[in-house]
Image (cartoon, rainbow, N blue to C red; front, side, top):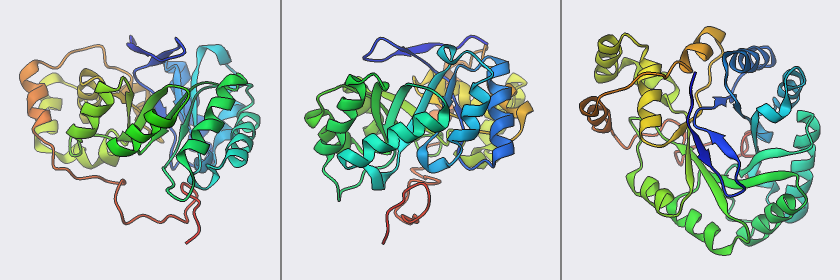
Length: 278
């Protein structure tokens, strides 16, 4: 596959397609990561809260680490200075590497100073433990604050983005501020597969619904991070060397419902992904 890249502030090239690893058990994680790397993916996304870093590290040991763009994220409960440094060091140990290509604040936590959080991120970059830093699930306002108080560039905002949740204002701000947009849940956790427009385009182009939506995301300048527990689907999701015509891209643009699948107020903040006690 031929995947374009995005240049980050460090000069590193971020592959514009990555493998998401959220909500996979250990066996599924290992199979998916191995299938992805064998298929030519060069971008793996994980997080402290996914509890799969050690499994991913075991698989990465079979490959050339420097050929893989590796991202992890720090839990929202660990955003104070000392905890963030410790979280990063623990992630590195579990992943079996001495650096991360990208380290993200997984979710904002208004109970902890953003300035303190980003001071720790700058320290990690200065020590060479991370090459670029960013955020995840930040609104335009929160991202603006991060840009204002950070001593190092905010390279990425990883957000929920798919045809049903296109977030025009946030996307516009990310572009204006030279912040790369990564799409978590780019397939709306399969909700878009039954969409009549997506299904029609899949038939027209002789592609899967997932391939149609991922091709559209890449065309929008967004970096999708699809995840699958099925190695065949992992491989198929990388087959994006084809084009949607402009009219069909517009048809997908028109599917926006402002309808998230996970970025909603009704979330369990005590779960592993957030780790904030009530």
